[in-house]
Image: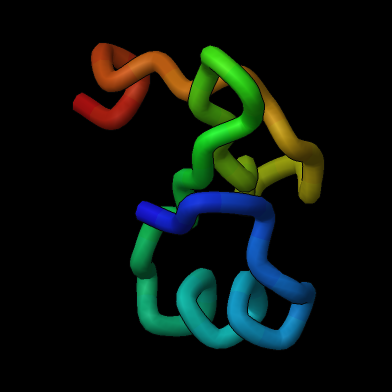
Length: 48
């Protein structure tokens, strides 16, 4: 988990290694969705 959105190079590297990228955005958490290439609200239930 990152304290803010990482740069695209880090997101690309983590995604290529099948690592999910999550960061804090104010009072919420965001996740990079590798399937559609978009930032989304993080919901841990969606990882299962």
